[in-house]
Length: 254
Length: 313
Image (tube, rainbow over all chains, first blue to last red; front, top):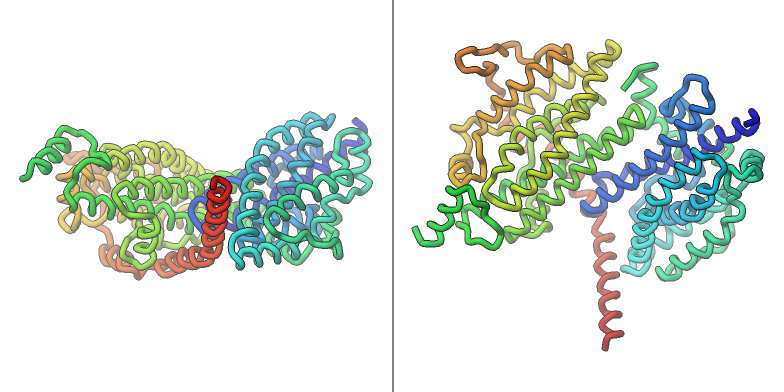
């Protein structure tokens, strides 16, 4: 493997790890705040899956970096400007509708992305995808059910769900952006060419939103920057909380 | 005694389980509802002090373990609510009783979790004390409760191990980490002992509960077991025992220890601990905020039902 490819895979695994840890963290903020006990459990479950994914991606990135860092150095010792997660993942938890709509967007994305990643020539990435596919199947069933219930529930739930769709829509465009690193890996059959996934994503999301009696927004705005470290203001606060204990005791084991 | 009562007592004496459809004295039912719902509420409220550290867990592994533990607690709450529902009370009634203060939950959760070490201390000491009690409750006379306890005990022993392991990592870590572990032990040791409830002589529900075999061992006996098992664990950690009077008593075959601060115990039970108000407020706020979601769920299900009925007609 050339150094160029190796570095690209390390960067790619870090990005996917960042997406997972940030979304996993956001979901975990719901524990003990759910609308009923079963939802506290479900949130815990889904969060746990994402934290698990983050660990696998970071461990692989650390292995490729081979500079003595481990998964926790990736999660806890990088600043928001170094994080490369998609902006959608870092948006605050919001109300239940906001979190479920975000989850639907993410779950449909992974439903389409992971089978492609499973085909990766890189065995580790493919193995992580294989495990994640099973989890995502359950995640999507849940977020889809909730969006249907909220969209087609009461007037209030409909209003909240539509507002969430409208507010989050502009953050979904960058899910399908490619840069040089990802293009290189896609050409090598290692990474996924996400630019080819938007039609399928849009189709699936539109079908679900329509069934939920919600309106699919026009593509009138798009915010981008996660993959270059140009974040919203939300991530800094999230990382401050997440990293405080780890950073207060440099070099300690937990 | 009526023949129903005789039959009931015969079963209790023969260690047969009482099942939901069996006849039971009204006071037995009430006593069980009180105890099981209190236990369920403890699991649910217990999510808060530990949940307080999910977003700050210092490593990804610890975050995953803590998430999975808190999720288990919620699951325990769920089976206990279901076990209690077999006695003819609904979950929403139980939640109302929790929120109004009519039902209690374990006072231990009214103590704040101030540092990461507290998460370890809760797993080790609080779950440890809970297990001592729950192991004994596996033999409780009410079938659904007993079966729930058997299942819960398996998971609780994992919780206790992870808590002890987390504390051990701190106790063997940097001086600051060790100090954090000692501080958590100092704060949680006493309230953990109070989890067993008042002295037997002061316990309002104990006597009848023992007679009906709802409870199988007395508060003081269970507390003594916990005191005894904890001494060695503290030694292994290399921490100082918070009780300066702890001393092996050869004659009794147990450790002697200081009496507890019962004023503090009653004050926290009566709603005046550090976090009593906060815990209930948190529960009420989440429940109230969730109302529109629960309404949406019922409205959606109702629409589906109506549609199905229309299609069938």
